[in-house]
Length: 341
Image (tube, rainbow, N blue to C red):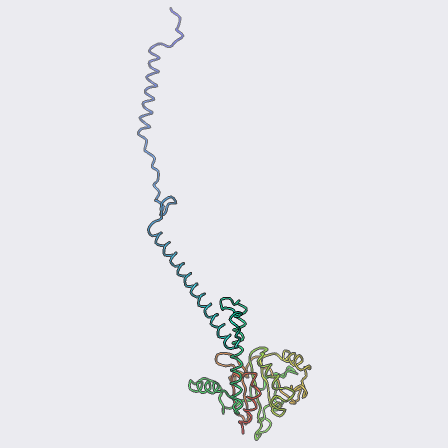
């Protein structure tokens, strides 16, 4: 018996080779029949970064550019118009003030600075204000207490049926009771009203009371008017001053501060022209913080606040002047009193 060989037999080798070949063929066949993996197809971007813009995008870009150019052109036109207006104002101002210099020293408008143009415009406005003031003074020198403009405005208000007090309407007394005395911080009450309203003292009294109102807080117009009215009794005369009342919307304390700063004393008195505590020895100042008196007497205006004057007598509104200027307040009061006769 021969010993076993160290190498596998030929049949065995062939079997192994066939087995390996069969396995390889089977694996390739199986792999070939596996389903193909599908890659999801993404939608294309509307405007891929690398792609050129669409016709719609180009149209929008052109339209935006056109709008910006149009806005810029409008702004440039407006700026040009403003410059032309400023130049025209400067020309008018130079002509009004007669500031003519030799050609060698006269600046062209284009060379004027903003401050110089503003100064010339201010001078022109001052000249216009001075001219208007002189024309108003001329109207009052004739004995009128209303300007032509005020008369026309009042006639227009009557025509339009504006709700306001007119001359000849009743002068109600009840709004006076809640007005505050600036010296006591208390309402006038019965005694205070009897001291101020003449027909409350006597039903047969032919006396009058002048009421000047202004609803604006710390009104410079009203304060200038008070200074002119007082003038140590010389503004409208002592007799008229003692029959005059100022009604404003400031607090009693604020009114006392104004009196002290202006006249040197918070108590008033005959020497200052302001009525003192419990005495009608000068102009009386009363407070209408809630503006109830002004509302009752239609002194708030239809469109804006202003200073108004009323002359009350015999239970009626005898004279009314609305939107009064402080510069002519004394003439307005004097002429209105003369017109009572």
